Length: 208
Image 1 (cartoon, rainbow, N blue to C red):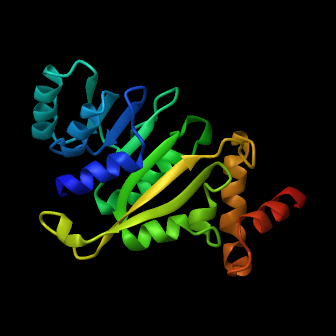
Image 2 (cartoon, rainbow, N blue to C red):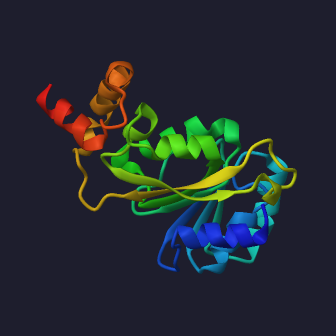
């Protein structure tokens, strides 16, 4: 991904020196290095052994950078406030977003994720099951589209930045996340309609 796009991605996540920033699927460390430059405490999560070694060489010069050798599909969010900035493999989008948002009490304060454009739009929509799943706790929106030529090698489709921000006041208690997810999945097919957005769903959930 081009350096200008990475800088914009980190800026969109509003990472500062006061943050704990997490790069999931850190790869060769392009996003990690940009996060380190903000002065934040950074955790880079990567599975590939060669890339982990390269990240640890970077960490040798940056004491606020920690490298975790782990599969992001099995990664568990840290306790306490954190920000996630990630350009994961597109085929891990579902696994990554569920790891981030399925447990709202442990989810990030902010996240900026580079996803397939269609997936980002689907997750940001509050009239379908994908976006509704986490909407009571997180505001999700598409920040911008990224032309596929910004990547090397380029994927077949354009990407987009999905921004997630924790709601200051959640619309449901965190301990109702599983029940809400089941409710949305069970009713999505018969209730799907452009005018039936989050508030409409919440009323039905509370009155069930």
